Length: 100
Image (tube, rainbow, N blue to C red; front, side, top):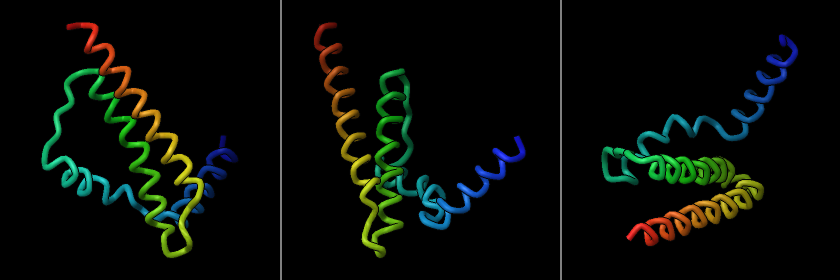
């Protein structure tokens, strides 16, 4: 386990050096994006929010790399996560329509 933890420490240092600490700014950005407090009440809302957060992380990584030419992997991941969220929204809409 000490070796594993040492590798994880190195991974953290490497990634933190590349991307910085965007998570420090997440709270402020989300507060502004949602116009203030956000209350999630249903499992579907929590699911949608969790899927929404994945692309936000990718965008923050891209922002940290923008002066170095961007970050292609983050853009690819962003596209995939956006479509996963779209699929989730489409399925949610279908279930909601069937309940009516």
